[in-house]
Amino acid sequence: MEHSSILATLLLFTICLSTSSNAVIRDPCPSPKTGSDLSVIHIYDKCSPFNPPKPASSWVNTVLNMASSDPERVTYLSSLAGQKPTSVPVASGQVISTGNYVVRAKIGTPGQLMFMVMDTSNDAAWVPCTACNGCSSTAAAFAPNTSTTYGPVDCSVPDCTAVSGLACPTDGSGNCQFTRPYGGDSIFSATLSRDTLTLGNDTIPSYAFGCVNAVTGGSAPPQGLLGLGRGSMSLLSQTGSLYSGVFSYCLPSFKSYYFSGSLKLGPLGQPKSIKTTPLLKNPHRPSLYYVNLIGISVGRVNVPIAPELLAFNPSSGAGTIIDSGTVITRFVQPIYNATRDEFRKQLAGPFSTLGAFDTCFAATNDEVAPVITLHFEGLDLKLPLENSLIHSSSGSLACLAMAAAPNNVNSVLNVIANLQQQNLRILFDTVNSRIGIAREVCN
Ligand SMILES: *[C@@H]1O[C@H](CO)[C@@H](O)[C@H](O)[C@H]1NC(C)=O
Ligand SMILES: *[C@@H]1O[C@H](CO)[C@@H](O)[C@H](O)[C@H]1NC(C)=O
Ligand SMILES: *[C@@H]1O[C@H](CO)[C@@H](O)[C@H](O)[C@H]1NC(C)=O
Image 1 (spheres, protein in one colour):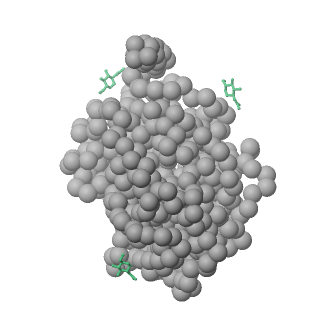
Image 2: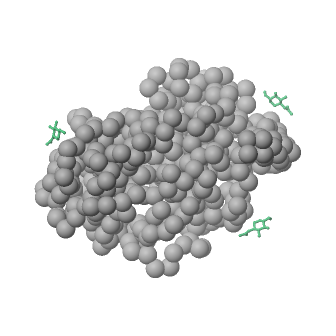
């Protein structure tokens, strides 16, 4: 058993070595999908090159560990939500280090395989480049000098001024360089570049992205980022008619270590009949996908929530977004508390806490745990138990897998996160301004 798995690993490794000509990029599993349908791989999945060398101590600990960076991300998303319109199209503001799902992409000619984090709340696209000072050594780096189609963007073009916030050096020439804070204490610097991006069978010429040259501070970005937001230089904006402003994804179950979900780009192959809810636009935060959450029920009880707590307000940033980079759903404190209190009322306690989760109970009770339904305008999403409960490693506890948003000065944003989106197809249709949600086993 052990012997054959070592052999299989060696074989896989050999295949990987022989298929990647430019750089040794580990692709633990060959991609089964083609066309405009890409495999979506959990960052800790066995098919991800970023999975930990040893299996994590337990799955729930991995989730808790990942969820521990949620507050930072939610605070970041909320802080941006109420700001003035920003003209920064690539890597706007602080880049938050949460990357939960990666997709394969190729950059350059010939294409170099990269694993890029899919992030619906960001417009940024960037990859670590070769000779990057301080980049993570575990990540594949893009080698611009081996691509025949690579070109740095000149500092004199308007895109550069928008991204870097800087004018050209006084001699009036040079590549477009910009820097961004990253994580808590790091800064990365990058060259705004253009090259061919290949996603599945689709070729996107002259795609603008940041080629990361240097990282200072503790946390280096381990992989590239593919911004799927709605802002001016995101994938949707740069591909125009190729994808017609439409994509969908289906995130695999958190426990399905051996499976991947899918990211379908463009209108072809999308579900024909799907329940939808309007997609709302916040001009102050153009990349975020806001929806109108109008209520929550626990079992048959409509949780009493003051409507103003749920209301969309572009100037304060209040409302609800669907996000691919937050691990567990976060509601502003009064909404979370009311939902949790109703959930507790319907179950026999006692309740205990586990990491971010404050409502854990004997798992023998999970069959009778009330179902949570999110009521969006025009669409009710009844969460399967897998999407509302998480079990402790011993299996003895089940926890309500949601939490309160950090209670800071601008705590107005509710974030529907990964765990609640497992095995659902989420369709983003920016042209018809709607989001569709349908059950799908996407493992
Ligand atoms: C994608 O390209 C491959 C190789 O060129 C081809 O075999 C396959 O049929 C294409 N798939 C789609 C859906 O276009
Ligand atoms: C490309 O750049 C890398 C890193 O600077 C270097 O190691 C490599 O030799 C270069 N390759 C070519 C073909 O110039
Ligand atoms: C929510 O519940 C927590 C206890 O879990 C409490 O500390 C907090 O004050 C409550 N907040 C609101 C707004 O009710």
